[in-house]
Length: 113
Length: 111
Figure 1 (cartoon, rainbow over the protein chains, first blue to last red):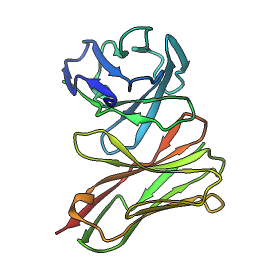
Figure 2 (cartoon, helix red, strand yellow; figure 1 turned 45 degrees about the vertical axis):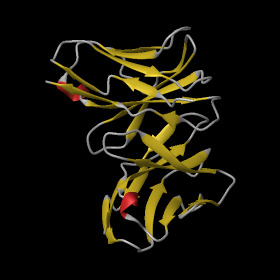
Figure 3 (cartoon, rainbow over the protein chains, first blue to last red; figure 1 turned 180 degrees about the horizontal axis):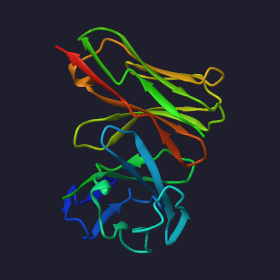
Figure 4 (spheres, rainbow over the protein chains, first blue to last red; figure 1 turned 120 degrees about the vertical axis):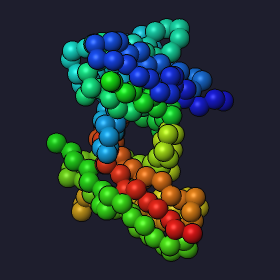
């Protein structure tokens, strides 16, 4: 059973471009969580999704950021018109049920030039 | 608002020593507490999960304790090894899914 997969592992974008981060949860997991880790800081919760539904997006900036978890395929975190402050490591986690342990992917390190 | 603090930010000890990492939090109303390990360029590995009703959990050379009344958790590592070198993160579940994280303690075990 493969773990949580994230791609790309590293992503470089210029200011104003779009960034798309993908997360494939563990097999059988329908709950996905996105976290952001700024340099030298702890992780911050961004959004929690179940299949086709956003359950809690309270940690996600209201502008430029969006997330989805379609019926088929990976969860996508999309950042439009990136700025330098978006440079961070973005981690995805999945769980079998909402109260179960969250398993984390290796992260996507986004660098905005 | 829940705040999680980990002190020290960095720690270097000789191989073989026992050590304690600290995590403090401001609100005792938590669902659970987890300790994670983060290796450079890699994901996060869950080490121990303590439910709100529990006081400690053990796995191999690791022992984590939880004292909600004082807002503290400790991660005890026995007989440290160079392979234990990593950043250790403490995360609180203050709802049934949202984790609130400390900034971590970077641990270096010197051979």
